Each structure stands twice: as structure tokens, then as C-alpha cells.
Length: 449
Ligand code: PMP
Image (tube, rainbow, N blue to C red):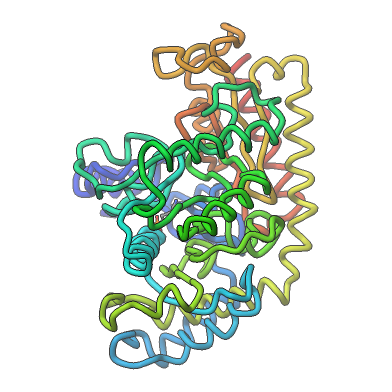
């Protein structure tokens, strides 16, 4: 096996069909905002490996810390003894927590596993069984995480029955409430909170409800930031009924939205916060942090896992936090975010492109463009789409992302709606951002032209 073609066809024969891929070829190495393929092709990366390599690929400080840790201790099993990088990481995370009450940590490998742990903690602590999740939410592919995932049936189709006791309430997203994008956030907040109140009266009583789980920015469900008032409304409701609030910051955390955590600007106090992705910039690591009282009742041995909180990943995560601070990542990204949003809004006002663009939204460098669609998913069930211009081709988001990939830029779609998402590295250069926007604009013009 030596050529790209040989390896590609080997992979197609021997890698499970259950994994989908957006771009052809075989990745060989990556640096900063570029991924290099075996055949020498270089791709500008606006995916960050699905929101993971926030500091760019192979950030030298992170790679160095991991390499050094490899020579010291690779596997410091968490049920044998504490290991140093695990504790150093907690030491570094404590001052950046969105609320001082969050002080009890548990590290896992993936976001899904951390969500599983959070759900288990909520059940054990409250002695209640049911969980409320958000329509459009994504929390992972393991059984519990899949049960609270409601962004697309494709994640659970064929795998039922899932974890029982899960109830779903609308996110304050205009699509889900059958309203146009211009709907004021107060209206969306009120309608979504009303539905939740009804759910607690009609479907799962508060005394049976352990937790509500929410992404503060809906990720796979369409890149929709939750209004502050909605988040605070959830907090109030949870306090009133002794329900725990689990905030999933797997995708929105670690600087992605312009602050360490997306909930920072709302001042929300979660009972449990879940993190992963940007935490270790590509090394497998996730974390669950909670109020101490949430974990005090857990039996020793009820949490854990062979590789949970791997020493190399923890050392990498410590270097991520240092690099974020030393390189003033959050300040620098604000300029890039402004540039991206301004450029995309300009496309929305372009007379040729305007009929195709329904919405531009997002926060920091978690940004989406939603296109119009003539009648999505065969039925035209969504009144927002039904009213749109029939000139628009179906599957526009997929067509545009595919065109971008052909032109040398990795770009992802998301959601059942026509959404492309921009998740470049937080330290992407100005020139790289300009190139990315140009490739996107050219691709869109070519597809609709
Ligand atoms: N929660 C959110 C918000 C996510 O975006 C993801 C991954 N896309 C997960 C959980 C699951 O993480 P993982 O893929 O690491 O299991």
C-alpha cells in the first residue's frame, strides 16, 4: 500500500461503513490551520476536526508537553492512585470555572462518556430517574448520550431501545417553534419556557426528574446560542424543583465562543458542566465538573474507566490552558470573529446571494450560515422554508460544503436544516480567514450560478 488510491480503497474495504467522511484522501500531517494529505494536497481547515484543535493543529507547546509526559508516565490509572498531571489540570481549571461552586472533577476520554457520567451523577444524587433534553441537542453516540441526542434520527436509527425516562422540550430556536428568524428572543424564550413548564405538568413530574441537559449553544442542531433569559429561566425552574442543570460545553467551551465558557456572559450556575474537544486540543480527554454535593453521595468505584484522565492528555490540557493565556487567544480571536461575521452578513445583503441565505448566526468562532430550501426533507413541513423562493436548489448546504472541499477548504454542514458551520482555529491568521471567506463565497456563487 503506497499510493493514496491504494490506501483509500483499502480503507473503504476495511473500515466500518458506520463512519461517514466528508473529504476524500488520506491525512498525513497538520500544522496550524492546514492539514496536509498524503498526495501533497493542503487543505485550509475550517472544521478543527469538529471543534477540537482550537489552538491549531500540533500546537508546539501542547505537542511538547505531551511528548515530555510520554517519557515520564503515560498510563497513570485513576483507580490505582492520583497522578500528577490530573491534579495539575484541576489546579489550572479551578480559576477558569464559570462558577466558584464547581469544584469536583472527573476526567474521561470522550464527550459522550462524560455525558454518561453526568447523567449517572444526576440520577444517583437526586434519587430520581427522568431526564429532560432539548430538541435539536447533541450529546454523543453511547446509549445514554444517544438517548438525550435529538438533532437527527440518523444517530439513533436502528439502535433502539435507548435509555428510558428521557423527555424532550423545544430549544428557543425559531425553527422549532415554527417562527421566522426575525422573531424577538424574548418571544422565543417565553414560548420555550412555557413548553417546559407544560412538560413538567403533563409528562414528567418534577419529583421524578433528575436533570435537564442543555448545550448553551446548540451545536449539531444548527449553531444557535440560547438567550441569556432562557438559561436563567432554566436555573430558576431547576432551583424551584430540585432538578439538576447539566450544561454541555463539549463544543462551545474552551474559548470557542470568545470566553472560556459560553455560559459566562449569562452568569449561569450549572450543577454539572461537561467539557471535552478543545480541552486537550486533540488528545482524547473529557471532563465533568460539579458542585461538590453532587458527587459526595457517589460510591467509590461507581465512576472510573481504564483510560479515564490519561496522563498524556492531562499534560496536553495543562499546556492548552497555558498557551491560551500566554498567547492571549481570547483577545485575538475577537477580531477574527468580527471579520467572519461581518463578511458573512455582507454576503447576506448581496443582491445575487440574498435569496439563498436565510440566516447568519453564532458567537465567537462558532458561526453558521443557514441557506434557504425549497421544501426540506421531502415534505416542506417547516413553515419558514415553505415560504421561500423556489429557485433555491435542495441540499444547498451539502453542495456548498462539497464545493469548498474541492477548492481546498474543509467545511462541515450540520443539523437537519441547510446549515454550514465555520469552526476555524481560534488563532487563525487574518489572511487565512480572508481566504476561507473567499472560498466560501466563490463556492456559493458557483453552486447557485
Ligand atoms: N456534546 C456535544 C455538545 C458535542 O458537540 C459532542 C461531539 N460533537 C459530544 C457531546 C460528544 O463528544 P464525543 O464525540 O467526544 O463523544
